[in-house]
Amino acid sequence: MSFEFDIQKSKLLEGVFIIKPSISRDIRGNIWTSFIKKHIETLLPDQMYFKHDKFSISNQNVLRGIHGDEKSWKLVTCVFGAIQQVVVDCRKDSDTYTLYESFNINEDNQISILIPTHLGNAYYVNSANAVYHYKLAYDGEYIDADKQFSYKWNDPVFNIKWPTNNPIRSGRDK
Image (cartoon, rainbow, N blue to C red; front, side, top):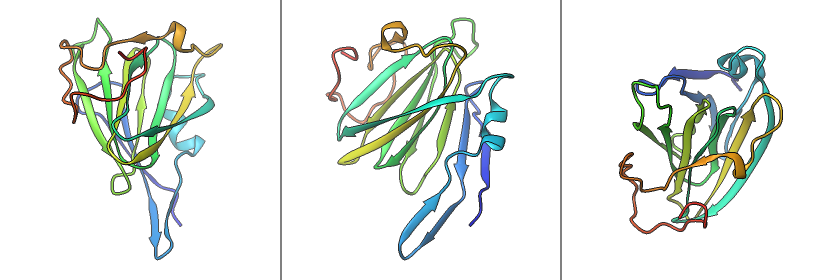
């Protein structure tokens, strides 16, 4: 089994990386590695490293986000199911401010996205359910929801093309 990664820079958003692992498939299913320190942490700023992981299980038609903060780097993927992953440039001094990039992550396109600070993270669940994984790197203590920025999922400034007009959302995301 190979532990290689194909790492590509986003062609649209500076600092965003698309990471495709090598996947071994056979009659049992598949197996892949999502993280190897020496390959992935080199993409982070100096002295930054991953500190903790979070998982979210969501049902079909759930939309989470747009959230972010000024100090957390996120390595995100869908480990089961199918999602539309969206990364939004919320950096007011950026040439790509308000632009977004969208990725379909599923069994056929098992990628991870590295999202730098000041960019918004959101995803929509296309399958019956999905397991979403966040790997977080930051200095100091973690910034939780009460100190993160949030934008409305259908903010006309971003004009994100979601597959529905009526997703299931939390109070925060409404």
